[in-house]
Amino acid sequence: MRVAFVTTIDQDAIHDDVDLPFQIDAFAEAGIDLVHAPWEDESIAWDSFDLVVVRSPWNYVDRLDGFRMWLGARRGTEGFCNPAAVIEWNMDKRYLTDLAGHGVPIVPTAFVDSIEAFHEAAEKIDASEIVVKPSVSAGSRLTGRFGRTDAAAAALAETILGGGLTVMVQPFASLIDTEGEIGTVVFDGERSHSFRKAALLAEGGELVGGEYREEITAVIAPDDVLDVVEAASRAATAIARERGWVNPDEELLYGRFDVVRLDDGTPALLEAELFEPCFFLPTDRRAANRFVDAVIRRIAD
Image (cartoon, rainbow, N blue to C red; front, side, top):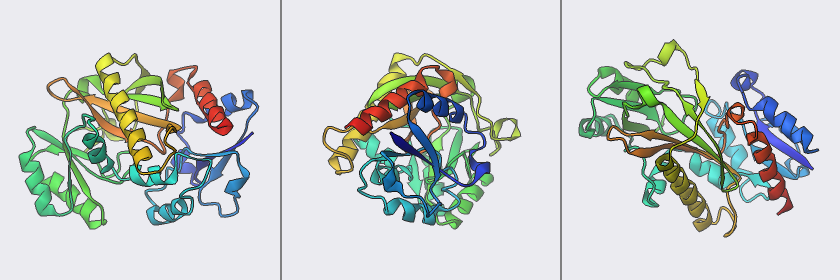
C-alpha cells in the first residue's frame, strides 16, 4: 500500500507537528509506504497512491486562492480523504450554521460582513467579553478576546473585513479559563481519544503567555461532552451524504471536534475540523494505530 499525506513545502508551518513521528512509526509497522507530499508540488502524481489523506497543509491560509484551485481540481476524486467538497465546506466556519441546523449545540455565533453588522452583533451578545475572528483562519490568526465594547474588537473586525473575509462574533465562554476546551478525535465514525486544551486567548486581544502555545493533556471526556461530539460527527456525515460528497453508507475518514462549556455549564461545539486537524497523538499510545486501521479499511473498501 502507498499512502500520501498532503502537507506543505513550508517547513515553518509544520515544524511543530507533534503527530508526525507517531504517524511515521505506525504506518511503517503496518508495512505501508507513507509519503509526505506537499500540495504545492505540481510534479506529484496524486493518482499513483492508494489513498491521499489531507493532513497538514497548514500554510493554506496564506495561499488561499492557490489552495482552493488545487482542491477544486480534486473534486470527485476517488481515494481522496476527506473529500475535496467536504474540505471546501469545512474551510469556512459558516459550516457551524449547517451543523446547528442538524441539531448540534454550538457556541452562539454571528457571521457579519460589515462593521455596522459587527457592532449590532456585539451589542446583542449577553456576555461581558467576546471573541472576534475570521470565518477562514488557522492557528488563532486574527483572533482576539475583548471586552464587548472594546474599540480594539472593532479594529480587529475592520482588519478582517479589509482582507475580504467574514467576521465571526461569539461570546467568550469564561469557563475556558479554568477548564479549557476538550477535543475528541473520530476515525471512520468511531471515537478514538480525547484531550484537554488550555486557554489560548488572554484579555485585550493577546495570547496567554504572549505567544501561540498549545498546552495539551490527555483526558477522559465527560458523557455530556461526548454527546455533543457524537451529534456533531453524525451531522457532518449526514450533510456530506445529503450533498453527495460521500457515498450513502460512507463515513468521513477523520475529524476532530472541540467542545467548550458555556457560562451556564452546558457543552457546545466550538469547532469541527475535518481536513487539517492535529490529532495530538502523544495523548493516547494507541491512537496512531487506530488511524492506520481506519486508513487500511478505507483502502480495502
